[in-house]
Image 1 (spheres, rainbow, N blue to C red):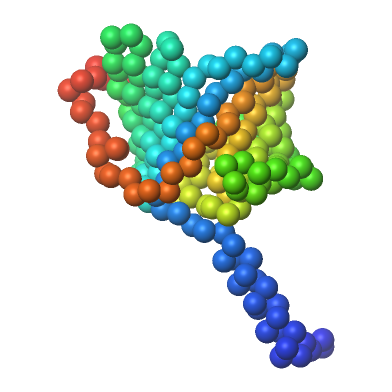
Image 2 (image 1 turned 90 degrees about the vertical axis):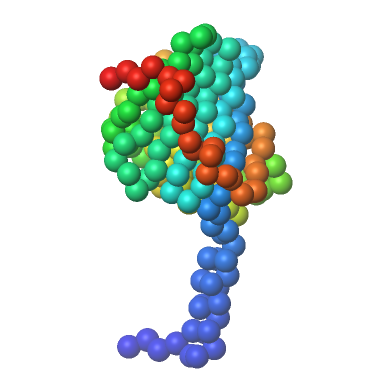
Length: 203
């Protein structure tokens, strides 16, 4: 039987603790992404903005475009989620099963050698491929790990905070989400409250 000296055991234990300490788990944060469409010629068009608010097990995402504002509010410990849609003067509210927000089957996840820095965070890159032919290149930092990673279901297994991701469809269309701000300040509970009187509930 192979026996390690106490000095080597101590060194390995310290290394494991150091790797764990490098990732800071945050229970409250807000991330803002700009959304761009990238043409086949490389031109970019600003489509809108996406905001993420995380507090404990609760998450709120707000997608804003000139035509639509859509909000998703969920708690990873609950079965239902709320979707709010604002189109012009029309405001609609819908309850959905949180478990129904599932991506197509993931076929492969390939870590890339590409390394970059975004908002002063060192980042790694991974390419995800699904059975429907769509792919996503995800750039993330392991410096921070939010308590909720599934504001995009594709991020469930990403070991850090995603700061940039590009979805490429099998037809070659590309949508890029780029983080412009990460705020680790406390988030008040009223961010997740909804005045249901302002919305028409739909099934």
